[in-house]
Length: 354
Image 1 (spheres, rainbow, N blue to C red):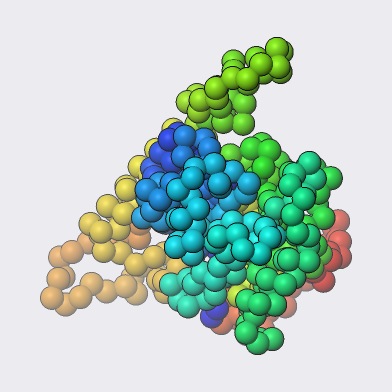
Image 2 (cartoon, one colour):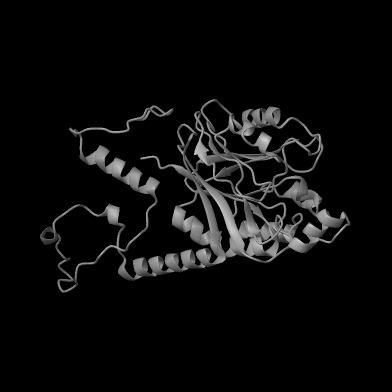
């Protein structure tokens, strides 16, 4: 059976508060959700403005597979050299020719699946750079060595205004932005299989003005005087989106928003530690790996007749994981099933499902 590919995109990492959330929370998120590839926007990871080699290397060490960016990637001068040598740090692909770095990257999962990541930036109230829609199509073709490869390329679209928000979602199989730093609640699967979310949000201090202290930012509106912006610290939250896609068609099959506080992350880490310790101490198989048998049919090994029956450790499944396992069980164990009943509120969806 071919399992779906699970892609986690982490919204704009802002300063040390955002980096601390990634360091503390990413291992547990990857384990809990069985993540295959982690993508993160890192353009504001260095004190809220830009990125440095040291910070980029830290994010990669903590489990980020690809780092995306926007116009703030150049805020630290050393990024010019770093982006030219680190292929996993992307700048918008629609910058003019000759700009250091690349706008796309091919990541690979542990089982060899290829995930294409394309990073573009919108042009509404922004720099007048190349057309992002034309560039996306060009990058897709450049990343596709033959018609049977990379049938779906997840894309991180960097657009600035709401009127640009939905347009990029049409030609690609995973589309989202995080420029406003405010997570939207419009996640959905578009008719052609694109997992779409207008804005993933921000990983950093949410008691702030897009990540910086409130007073200087507010003062700039009130008196129009220049002010020094410092990264805020209050209410750090990790915003992300999880997209699950079919590796054969490349189409998204599920999309979920993630918004975790620092305490949520600590609780998830503790849950994973307890689960791991229980599994190690009991050496038990997963619940769905056990045959369905009566208690009196399970015999202890002859060499250990006195050992009590071991109880499987509990593992929290997502709805998608449970659905996949139930479907697999039905398809392999029940070859013909007849069901009689009445259907209510029946609807034909765009995918063809009832």
